[in-house]
Length: 185
Image 1: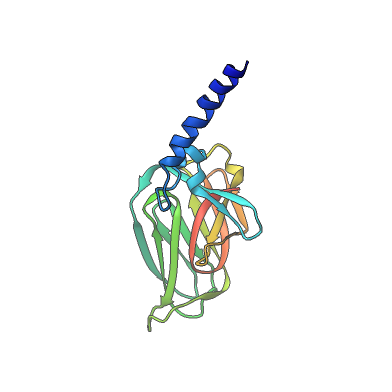
Image 2: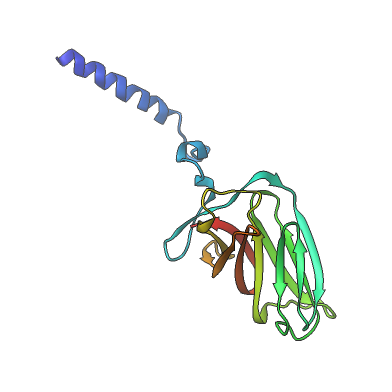
């Protein structure tokens, strides 16, 4: 019986020692494949809720679109996505820019500046609507899709979002510009 325990100990401990011997401070991080699917896309809100960034079927190229929209309102279309500025959301003509980031996740950078002076516009009189299409997104349950505000401090906040199943859109309301992403809760 003693011989069996020694074999078990040697068979279990020696491989672990070899693995540890190969580890160094500052070595490569654990591969995402070992952490489980989607681990590289996990985000945690400041409230502790976990989200997973939506992944596209094919990596996208960066796409940027701009439009001057005034007090009458309007729509900025970029790829299959859009930003709707309602009437009276701005008091003067504003240059709106949306950049769909390249990569596997659906992330959008939004910015706005005064059309005349180029000065930054950071807030709006009425909420704007950001509509992100999930037609090219890997998703098993669209009801779990939301739009997240990716704050510059690394935290995230879920926007009030609704689903348009007919057009395959997730629509969120926002009052300021930053970086946003589609995610699953």
